[in-house]
Image 1 (tube, rainbow, N blue to C red):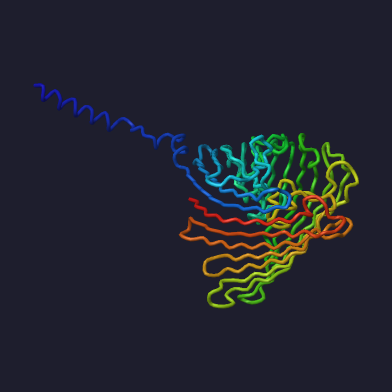
Image 2 (image 1 turned 120 degrees about the vertical axis):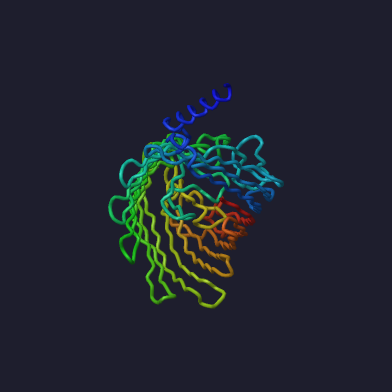
Amino acid sequence: MIKNKFSVLTVLAALIGLITPQVTYADDPFWEALTSGKVDFSARYRYENVDDDLAPKEAHASTIRTTLGYKTGKLYNVDGRILLQDVRPVGADDYNDATGRPTSKTQYAVVADPSDTDYIEGYLGFSGVKNTYAKLGRQLITYREAPFHRFIGNILWRQNWQNFDAFSVQNTTLPDTTLSYAYAWNVNRIFTDEAVASAAANFDSDSHFVNLKYNGLDFAKLEAYAYLLDFENAPQFSTDTFGLRATGAIPLSPSLKVLYAGEYAYQTDAGDNSSGFSGNYILGELGTSIAKPVAFIDSVTLKATYELLEGEGNVNAGINSFNTILGTNHAYQGWADRFLVTPDDGIEDYYVTGIIKALGANFVAVYHDLNSDNLDYDYGKELDLMVTKKFLEHYLVGVKYSDYSADTNANNSGATEADVSKFWAWVQISF
């Protein structure tokens, strides 16, 4: 009798199972969006040596940067992104981290990689409008291929990356056209919240970025932009910049291309910046790329570049030169970083670049002849060398050297009159 009772219950349970919808996590759209995303991870160990005439002692910095990120799937056209970053010394830590803290070792040369743990992305994205994606929250904002972020960038060479608390939107409705806009109310700088000076840690911002790109021409990529920067706690860097850029590659044969770039921008003071400065930025570049010149070389690229950032000299309080304070400026005017902020006399930079891709590695050499715009005197010369190699898809190793030799003349003063050499070696993994 009991056996039959259990049999009946078993049959009833089976029937209920057939007629009752099975509720699983897969039926929960929130859970599906939360778990169907993508995890990313990276680690970069780097040794940096700096021998700087401005500092009593050489710097030796052994640091590691690790990141862990996650991008969710979409729920009703909404997704989310979080990216955590940790930077800390491992081994040698004889360097000035540039934060101005009492623990900063100011007797050593500067290596601007302070220890910090923070999130550098944390935003919600919305794609419910056709050909449009908007983000609200902490994010990385760039408009050109890394590392050449001339005006707006993440300063990816340093271990701590610059990021923005912002609203941004990108639209691709028009053929071959990308229109981007961002409003940033805070800029989280590479010196981190540990920096003593308020403007070193963050720019309290009321800034607008507008960027328009058109790629519908075979011979040119066109770009127009307006960057309206207003910083309450750093008014000397509040500027309005408007510019145009064209780049292209013209094939002369299956293996030979002519490369060119031209750019012009105009900048004026803005907000509470009362310097009265207005000036121009000009870039002209011409080069060539040759594919497979010999069997073991994939390509050779040679470029000659002229770059001008005008300066009026020390004529008023504040900064009297064309500046790109939110750019990845390490990629310009030499890797020794003597010109991260444009001197008041401006910069006139003539440089040549050679790039060889061979044996699975990239070999880069750059030589700069750096001069002032105002008064037309020499700052110095700089030689930059780098070799990188990527292998097994996820791994990268590199070595890099920079040597800035200052010119001795009556007008050259401050940081630009001091020699500096730097050496880096690093290994990186990313998934």
